[in-house]
Every structure is written in C-alpha cells, then in structure tokens.
Amino acid sequence: MRLCVGIALYLSTHIASAEFSHFISRDGHRLLNGNQEFRFAGIHAPELHRIENDAAGTCSQDPRGWGQYFQWPTADEQENWIKALVRTGHKAMRIYVLSVATPYDKACKRETHILPPATPNGMPRLNENAMVVYDRMIALAEKHHLRLILPFIDHWEWWGGRKQLAAFYQETAEDFYDTQSKTYQAYLHIIRTVINRKNTLTGRLYSQEKAIMAWETGNELRHSNAAFVQQTAAVIKHNAPQQLVIDGTYLTILPSSLDDPNIDIISNHFYTTNNNNNPEQIEHDLKAINGKKVYFIGEYGLKDAASLDAIMQKAVHYDYNGARAAGAFIWGFRGHRHHGGFYWHKEYTGHYSYRLPGFTEGDSNEERLVIDLVRQAQAQLDGRSVAQPLPVPEPPILRNITTTGAITWMGSPVGQHYRIERSLKNPLWQVWQPWGPWVTIGRHISDGQQSFNPNIDTLFIDTLIAQNPLSRAIYRYRIFAANTSGESPASNIIKTQQHQYE
Image (cartoon, rainbow, N blue to C red):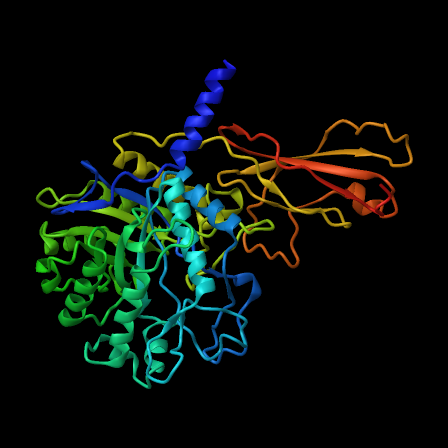
C-alpha cells in the first residue's frame, strides 16, 4: 500500500513537471497538441507577470488621475497562481501586455518592462528585473503544463502602451500604426528582442519555449491596418516559426489577415460598452472567418453569470461549417498574496476579479457560479458531462507570526478554508519538558475576504497571545487547507514566543 502511494506521488510530481512534448500547432481552423485537438476555457489571468496592487490605491503623482501602484510578483505567488489555474482545469492562459515606461514611474515607485532608449532616438530597452519575472512565468508554465498567449504592446495607457512608446520619439499614439514611423520600428525592435531572449531559468530562447503557445500583436489594437498587421506578423513568424501568431486587431476582422500565411488565430473581445457582449457575436465572427483561421475569444465579461454562461456555451458548442471557437476567457482573475489574502480589482461596473476555486465572500459577485460555469465548459470541451472534483489542496505556507497574535499564511492554490492548530510549552519548566498536544484553535477559516487590505485586515488572530502579552509561553503553529475533496497535510511549523526566553 505504501509503495503504491509512493509511486503515485512520484509519478504525479514528475508528470506535472515534465516538459511539453509538442508546440501547439494549427491545422486550418483547429489548434492541435500533437494530433489531438486543443480547446480551452478559463478565467482570464492577466497579471501572472506584473501585479496591480489595488489595496494601495492610486498614485497622486500620476497626472492621469488613475495611475496605479504596480509590483513584481514573488516566485511563490507566480507558482501559486499557475497551480490554481491548472488544478481548476485551465490548459492555456492569455496574460496582459509588456508595460511601457511613463515619466511618473519613479514617483509612483513602479517599474515597467520596456524602458526608454539609452540615447536619443535609439531603440527601447528591456528592464532585466522585469524580464527575469517573465522568464520565471514561462518556466513555471512549462513545469505545471499551462500554455501561454503573450501579447506585446497595449492600445491603451493602463500599463503604458503605444502612446508612451511613441513619446520616446516625440511622436503620437497613432504613429504606432504607421509602419514608416520611429515608433513602429521601436515596436518591431521590442518584438525581435523579446522573442530572441534567452530564458535565464530554462536556458532556451523564448522562440524555443513550448509553453508559449502564441504571440499576439498587441492588446485591443483597434486601429490596426493591413500593412501594420502583415509586417508585424511576418516579423513574429520569422523569429518564432514554431509558435503561433494572433492578430490582436480589436472589434473587426481584417480581410487581409484571413489570407495572411503568417496569421494563425483571429481574436475578439466582447464587452457591453462595444455592443458585442452576446452569444450572437460568436456566430458573426465564425461566419466572417469562414474556417480560414482559428478563432479565439480573448476576453469577455462584466456581466451576470447567466449571461456569461450563454456566451461560454455558444463558444463550446456552436460551429460554422465545422469550425468552432478554440477557446474563451472570462475577465478576470486575481491570486493569493505572498503574506495572505488575495489581490483584487474592482471594475467600473462594480464587478470584482474572481478568485479560484471560489468563495462565499464572493457570492455578491457570483464568483462561485462563474467558476462553476467555466469548469463545466472545460469538462464539456474534454468530452465529459460534469467537471472533475477539485484535487485535495496542498499544504498552505505559514508565514511569521506577530506578537499581536496575527497569523498569516499564503493560501493553498485550491484551498477554500483552513484549520489552525497550536501547541505550547512553558520555558520555566524543565528543559526536557515536551511540547503540549496540538489543539485546533480555528476551523473553517477563510482567506477569501473581498477587497482584502493587508495593512488593516487580518486572516486570524490567536486571542491567547493577544490577551496575554506578558506570557512567557512559547507557541508553535501549523495550518491545514481544505476543500470539498478533503484536507491537506500540515503546513510548515512556525514558532513564536513573546519575550525570547528560550
């Protein structure tokens, strides 16, 4: 029995970390993983490589009025998020763009991926701090079997986009789409530099990374034109011939892209503000593409769960002359913080980001309903009628405990609630005195608070410490994660003592 369990654990560990066997390829209107059709559904996780910390508010020194505080995720955070995605059925994920520097970054204590030229009219530079985080995202995606869709530059200003890139050359945002402009040449330089970067963790060029399913010309490039897309796609395909190319044109389908041999995938985003957030848009797009390319819904959302499900079910089942959507992502996901709780984002519609695997605290946001409909779609795409049960959580990571009794932990990727145990001993007893028994001091503790602010909110407080600040007792703690499938093994053990008598 023990041998069987040991072999199963060994196999699950090594299979999960095995390298991909194939690049994702295209056969007409289908994606293939080897000789198997590759289709996917999920919650869009834009920030696997850069985090917007909404709990910090906005930066008053950014004159745009909405400039946020951004930070690089830790290695623990990135792996936790990718595990959460994969263990809830995600096969692929589209992230957000490479960020571009603004004049306000230093005042707002933030870094970006793309830096200004070192000399006037030179080419932009990549920020090595940022790209090492990007390297790690790709390596972890390979380790846990998640395919990545990577867009280059944003049409919008949120992270710094085409306008900020053009500002390096005293040009306008619209010059980004002009293939004769300095801005466009800088854009192509970024593409070539990124694709030919050697990953500091895997030792491979990005063009050799099977975890990278596709490169996207950019995010919501609504002013794309035929020359812009054709030249950009040719550069991407020349530098990454084994990876796919997505036309990031927004809200329209360029006829030239349907016949371009360097374009593999046509994408669209559905939002109510664009009057296209409905199942019928899928029918319209598939008819326009007419089987010439793969079709993919890169983002949709900010609607009630029933409306989201109607679009997702159309994406799963509708076909036009045999062509179907390859995938669809609902906007958007946020993951665990390194020191406990979740990152979050609130949209102008009032919708919050979704946390996996779903929490009762998110019921006003229909969080569990949305995650259930996504997991149901994933099951259908795999030929099953119902979603598989969640895996039993892995142990959470217990962090240092303060003298106020605040206990913090990084939640398990698919944990829904936690059980906390404490053991103690008194240093005034004999040296050989053993630790006391483990006692449960908290059950069904959730880390799913909406709008969690680590500066003021706590996950759990041990009142024994809080009410006895002068106690000489030494405490140790461990924590267990649980979901509907069971409880994890114990976490690491953290010991604390009030006055360091031991």
